[in-house]
Amino acid sequence: MGLLVNIVMMPCLEFWGRKWNLLDIATAVVFFILHCLCVMAPFHFTWPALWVACALYLVTGFGVTLSFHRNLAHKSFRLPKWLEYLFAYFGVLSLQGSPIEWVSSHRYHHQFTDTEKDVHSPRQGFWFSHMVGSSIAALGLENSKWKLLQYGGLKNLFYLEVYYMPPVEFLLGVGDGCKDGMRFPQYFVSKFSWSHVGWLGLFALGEGWHNNHHAFDYSARQGLEWWQIDFTWYVIRFFQLLGLATDVKTPTESQKRRKALN
Image 1: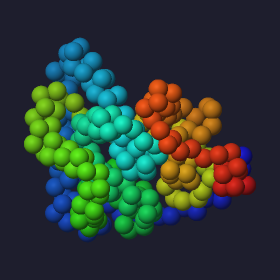
Image 2: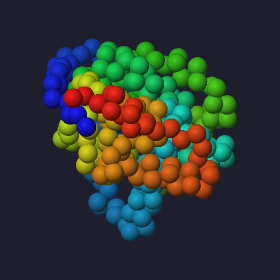
Image 3: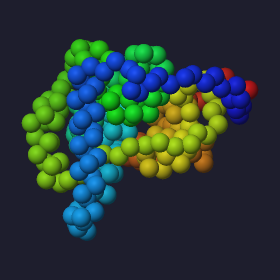
């Protein structure tokens, strides 16, 4: 399969030189305080807390990758409503917002990749794309999420997040992580941020094959090669074998060949 050899590099925007609004500042302050609190974690270590953190890492991870991302944002497969809602609740525990907010911002990311409207483009710089960009309102997208009420019962998860989850997560003392890494060769399409981060896929439960994902965003499987580990796909495939996941979308070999860059 062809590899991408001509990569167009685009300059990142300045971090300190940008125009910050109040929401940008508030988001940055929250993340700063959160990471300061993490410094205290080693002084309050307990084994039960570690096991809870490991369990929530998997629960919230699959809640985001399987539910928010592949099931709700891209409709890569269908689940029975009880299972769809269960994994959506898991995603809420990740502190990444409600399903409606997450899906809305992610669809904007795909629609406006590497433009000023991209909610987490690397062109905005490392800090903005990973932290400040977490707020869709920072880029004027605050009203778009209400257009996604087609998910019916999922709108109730917004209230769960606001009123119930903060005290629960405070008691558990579990936070979310961040990511960064080296870039692997790209296979299908050329964009500034559409790069594989292979080793990160191990920790992100299969979300590291970013070039594959932007080439076939409808695909329930992001690790398209046998050696591209994709834990989220393995879970989806397991549900498919049980008859719980239906209408599972993946690209055919001919589709991959047509889109490959030679």
